Length: 66
Image (cartoon, rainbow, N blue to C red; front, top):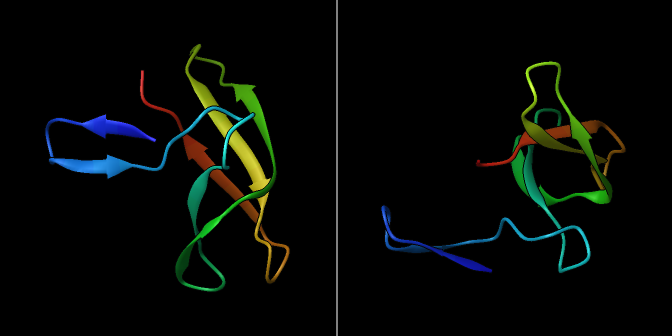
């Protein structure tokens, strides 16, 4: 976990080898840990993480901070 000084809260955005990535599942309408996260690069060069919802299997997507 990394410390986000702007909000003063711990941010669960970790490296892929760590605990996992948390993202919002549109179908379940809740934040959950991604299953099988994979780092991808967008066309504009930004890094993102793709994965699946552990409960319903819907695709989840989160753009990483730069």
